[in-house]
Length: 365
Image 1: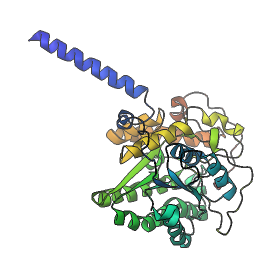
Image 2 (image 1 turned 90 degrees about the vertical axis):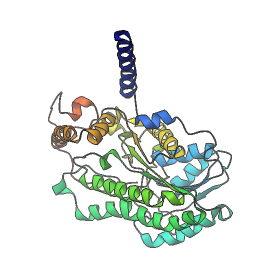
Image 3 (image 1 turned 90 degrees about the horizontal axis):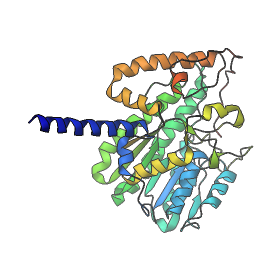
Image 4 (image 1 turned 60 degrees about the vertical axis):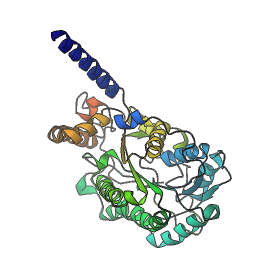
């Protein structure tokens, strides 16, 4: 009997160590990683509408979806950048790429945009709606965040996607099939000091689309909420043009992907360290979508670990958040670049004061 117990304990120990090693090497939640990549052909022949498709995550997802055979509708505010992305989509349905400029902050445009999208590809309908557009978030203390910027952020990050979803949903319900993909953020799950308004919009998106999922899943509607952490969106295909261009008849929309890049990438090279690549993030989002997972966490450590702690050990998560918040505010006040290393997040290492940062915010491209 003692031998059986010893063997059982040894097996349990080995399994536990395997789990711990797997978690230590993870760049996404373990359920997503266990599901594996998106099976080839998942999106073949499907109509996928992507907002914020002119750069970053949106552009890379468009390229990957095209390679898998998807028919694409690309929306953003910059016609020239959408045209560039469309030209880079060289999959089996490369000729089936529709460009639809859209101002999500002006909900009066949405009915006409949805009408055009539903008529595309001989009226096939929209199989996937990917909410990737978002208002870029400046890092500012609560007391310095302007009211007009608060309203603009909610308009594009929350009210626009909700209005677009409400307009697209009837067609999906009629066909008894459809999949809505929402790019939220780690800021929608854990506190994000100096990003209070952005975090509020992402919490709102979590609440709305989680509720939508449980309300409509029995009628054939799937919802996947992607929760990415820090993404190196300035690297690769996400780089924007130097000057924005208005998008034809429609007003330019203040949109970009959730980690929209700044113009001067070199200035923020330090911030990029430790971040996930856009390509890897896009692969994981499409994998979670293909496997119909309702929520997926995508991030390198330590942010991924913080997500787990906040979910399962909330009191410990609050203690960590207090330390992180104090460190982040101090770095902001002393003009240091933000960093996602464990030492920087927890306030260890050098505390070298530099010139104070500018307080103004930045609109997304």
